Image (cartoon, rainbow, N blue to C red; front, side, top):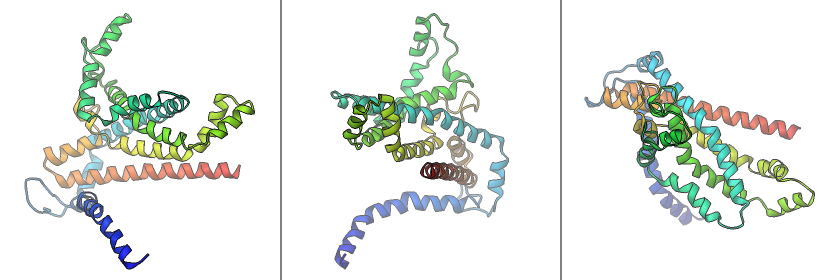
Length: 295
């Protein structure tokens, strides 16, 4: 590569680099710095040095741990169905000779809608007595209760259902793209050898989509751990704090209590949890791959 070509490459990268520094790397460094200070939204500057006091406070708060558990709970509710259903629907769609465009559109269309629209739709569905869910309960002879979102035992499940319906299309498209990269000749040869549809999926589809599955699971875990919009709009953390997630707690500490330093410390702790879970997931995947190679 000549010097002129290298300069042109850097010029093409410059706009993204500037946005990366201004909106991602810069705020991340600022968050880390302010977590050691008593920074506030009502005062200029960093404020007084706090050391690890903000971290100690967050680790000692019961609502921090409850919000972290609610975040993990939401992740457990949403990740398995978003991976399994996306794979199943992608396999079924890929086997269709006609009308694939319709199913691509049908599954992906909700994903492009804003979170506010999705939240309003599902709040209406879960409205007690008059919502669609209550109408279905009445139609099958059940008595509608106070509502899915009104109970601490079911509110997070309601948010998870809305999220699965909303974001399923993204994983569906990833799987469908991976399926279309698998040569048709492999399935034809397996069919000639007498392999059933399930045997073809087990022996051809699943192994060849292993990397896609790893990507989907990792992206889904990270996205679920960053949940905020749906909870804030559908339940606002309620009833009580039964659905309050980590980002909602961080927002409240930072912009309601005006304590940016403490909110930054909570953000760093959440970041550590996300990185730890992602690393553990990758290590487990590598260990499983090594066992398969050894076998």
